[in-house]
Image (cartoon, rainbow, N blue to C red; front, side):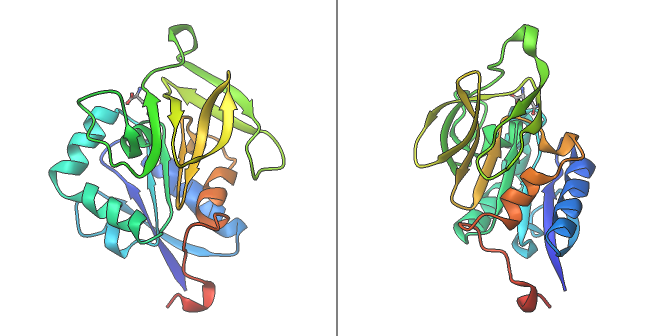
Length: 205
Ligand code: GLN
């Protein structure tokens, strides 16, 4: 009956993402069991995945060192949804502009780390997001900007720069949608993305 969700748990807001996934599932009439991904072997059992923020150089190093990275690529190649937030977006991108990040290349964008300037290192902004009726309260923390977009759709911009994108089954945000009680971004990424395959209710054992 229950979907299996994974939260990449090498760093970042793991429990907040888990709670947001559970709320979004409830809002969409689904049940979900959330697992924390700290080692390889678990991602293949997941129907949907979240990759939190943190420090992109560290996340990149840790997921490549034990095989989680290639499992995430396989997950996306199978059309299953991934939500990658902040540093997670940097790691998921095709170009992080930093040699210390070994990009997964599952979102066709180039990003600029820490792009929103020192005086605005952290801020909250009401974002208009394609697919959501009302503005989303987006929390930015030393956030990356997206400075070139390939085969991806821009879902939101701030200050003239894209800050939310969708590339097939993958949604990436510069901001932290797990840090507010509003779980509409998780809903959009996991349950409202027609390009992503989540097992239907009747197909889940
Ligand atoms: N500044 C971090 C980085 O470049 C991202 C910050 C975050 O995830 N909140 O990796």
